[in-house]
Length: 181
Picture (cartoon, rainbow, N blue to C red):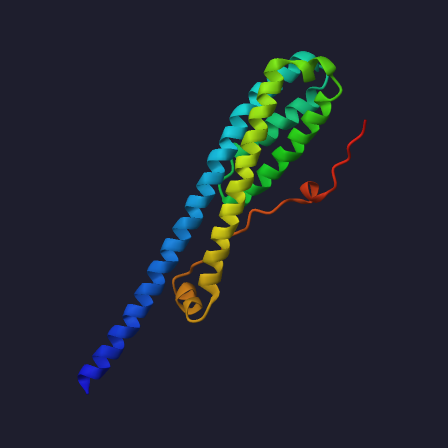
């Protein structure tokens, strides 16, 4: 009889260890996916000072727009959590949209080879960010689902595993883009 109890306890402990290890693995995948977004966002933020300097030469009186781009970039650099970084990213997107709208007002700037190159680089990075965001959200979905299903939810709560946030578009990014000629 004692052997049966020991076997039942071993099976339960083995199940708990398996679920716990799977939670750790999936949480680490989420962290890795976030770091891939972070790499692409840093590439974007490395391009921003070059774009701002290029635009400065053509639009020196547009100081506020240029300062907002740098301020948004610095907010991201100082973000401590993924939630802070997501919010800072949304600020950067808005500031960059205003910067490129400003560039439309300066035909010489739009024809500048350096500006065109930087704009192309930024477009490529934005595509990579989009793919990284999708991968991150897929990974978060798998982790959160695994964490929330029965009996995993008991173990996850016992060891204080938290849901991970999705990388979502902010309200500005959801609005229709107005194109005027």
